[in-house]
Amino acid sequence: MVEQELKDIWRNSSQVEKIKIDLSNLLTDLNKRAKRLNNVIKNRDRREIIASALGAILFMYFAYEVPFIIARIGCLLTITWFVYLVYKLRNNRSLKRPIDLTQSFRQQLENQRQNMEQEAKLLNSVLYWYVLPPFIANVVFILGIGDPSISNWESGLLEYLPVTMESKLRMIGFIALFNVLIVWINKRAVKKTLKPIIDDIDRLQKQLEN
Image (tube, rainbow, N blue to C red):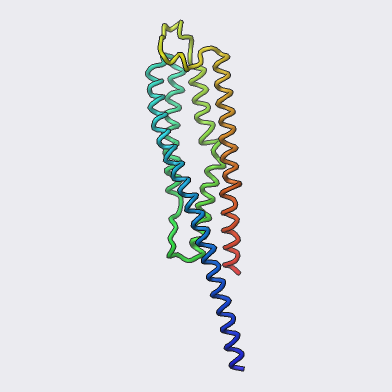
């Protein structure tokens, strides 16, 4: 009887250790995927911040060069959005939890899940913080460009800025279509990249509970 009990204990403990090893391997694989994604996000944030700095400088020049008040207001709105964009991205990163491999499996999974959910929330809401604000500012800027002949404004910028109503509407339409593409790309990234990782985390958490 004692011998059989010892065999059962050995068999059960071996199974528990096997489960622990499997969970450890799965968690390691998950951390690698999350790390690769985090590097992509870091590079994205870096590019956006650099682009925001250059964009702010460009629209400062526009605000100085363009003599139309409404267009200048559009420039100032765009510059304000560039500043907000930098804040938004940095704040999003500060809200994420650091991954500490010395923590328990359960805590690591919870941290990873919250980070993925935070990023998914950011991407799903790009319409409200990334698309609409600069689109409105750009529309104000474009429509605010007046007739250069009336104000005796001569500048090399006239080769690139829309002056006629037809060219203004065409540019606004192009920007609108481009913004639709941006929203679609971000929604797709959530569906194809973030959601699968969140689902894998949920499955691992259920295994730990069992």
